[in-house]
Length: 271
Length: 64
Ligand SMILES: Cc1ncc(C[n+]2csc(CCOP(=O)(O)OP(=O)(O)O)c2C)c(N)n1
Ligand code: SF4
Ligand code: SF4
Ligand code: SF4
Ligand SMILES: [Mg+2]
Image 1 (cartoon, rainbow over the protein chains, first blue to last red):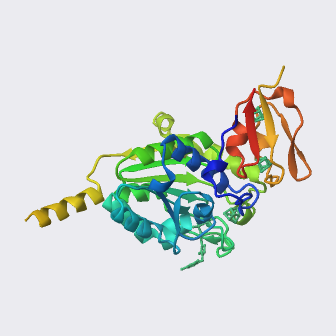
Image 2: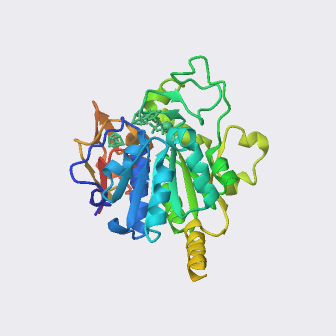
Image 3: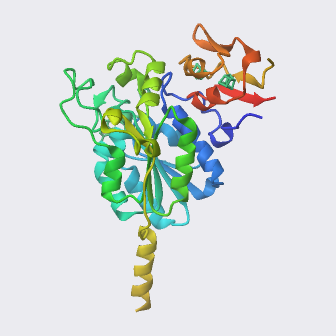
């Protein structure tokens, strides 16, 4: 028997709307396998997104889902988790949604170390609206709003999450399909804010403007730029030029937000 | 060599991106206009790579 994805998808929702070769579908499959591995019950799991192609995911997944305002996934998810701390809360969405318009909510969820898992699909672009540059578009690259090359430096989203205080931060790519579920599983099991950045492809609005003529070219790029952190330790700075580290990048234990909050309530009520 | 898995293609879901064709290690799959087809069934080693990377839920690998 082949793996049954459709048990986790709302009936009649396939085929999905994503373009041919869009990595979001690969990531959604990884998320489904990860939730399955963790034995998550539909009724005890909330999947929250903002707006964008990546943020369409909750429309397909047959769980409790919230498709919210642009950039606000972390804010709504914080509300869900505070109201129902026993629920597993998963955010998913794009780089534009999570780190550009929603960057503020994202960093504060990291700072609070609230117990949720944020799957951040970084395709380096605002895909849904036609390929405007985002805060993770590499410098020099072409977007519909940077026709002469992007003058801005790009965020390293995993480093941003670590700097802001997330206690589990990992990265992989849409090419490395089995690592997607492996890292999401670790994120779900981690108590605190877990961020899994997934380098992704948008062949339609990013690839074709930036020398990646086909979907396969984009996939090969993801394959080529990824270097596991363990291997990177033995590489020279020259060898690491243009590469991106993958695997678990950061893990620490720090008090979790809902537990802290509950302690304050107990203390004040007891007084 | 005999096939280690039977490959099921759900044609209504396939968008013809050709990711599965490119990364199949034994060249089992081929594009047929805009939909993938099994061209070399016997060579399948059941590695599951096509299913894992198909963004469109269009391939199932049934191990034999
Ligand atoms: C307040 C607000 N501003 C702008 C938009 C338009 N908008 C919709 S999706 C999007 C970008 C999404 O980019 P990203 O999160 O990277 O997702 P992708 O489409 O690349 O997967 C923008 C700017 C909006 N819907 N709401
Ligand atoms: S526009 Fe880009 S991100 Fe959106 S579905 Fe198409 S390929 Fe995916
Ligand atoms: S399971 Fe592996 S060998 Fe068989 S068709 Fe898929 S990628 Fe090719
Ligand atoms: S990867 Fe999936 S959608 Fe793409 S050609 Fe193969 S079966 Fe079709
Ligand atoms: Mg994007």
